[in-house]
Image (cartoon, rainbow, N blue to C red; front, top):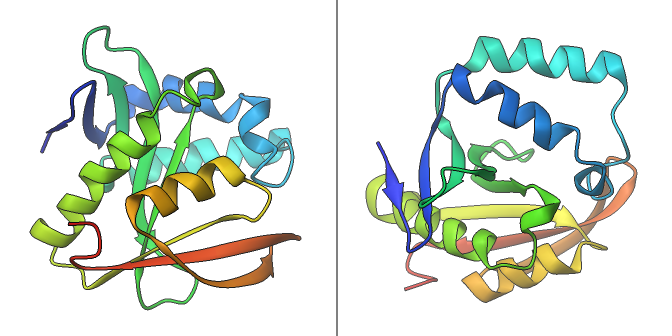
Length: 165
């Protein structure tokens, strides 16, 4: 399954994407919003988990359509509440502010509601991550609640099927 947007190709992550994912994990700007830079032990465990999960039809690589350059990744995972799926995205910081997150997440919303027939989708981000919050709001997500998780204030957003059409 391959998704295309005006500027991007979105494909299920494969083991061949491992080095690109590790590049994203090495981007210190990303970790500002994910609890600080990871330890070497955390990264080793992440790589091992990644190798066990792939290929995974719920995790996607995001690339520039023209150049093939890795931009980031997106995923659908069961949210901490255990009931609904959560849309997550992580882009290399050099691609922030170019509209890629909105463009790719919009396509993933279409897929979630039209193909997967999900009734509701969640997204959680740090309250301090105003850029990510703006992306979610632009896509039609509504703030459900604020909470503390992973030692930081979080915002939980939700969108219902048909909420972005």
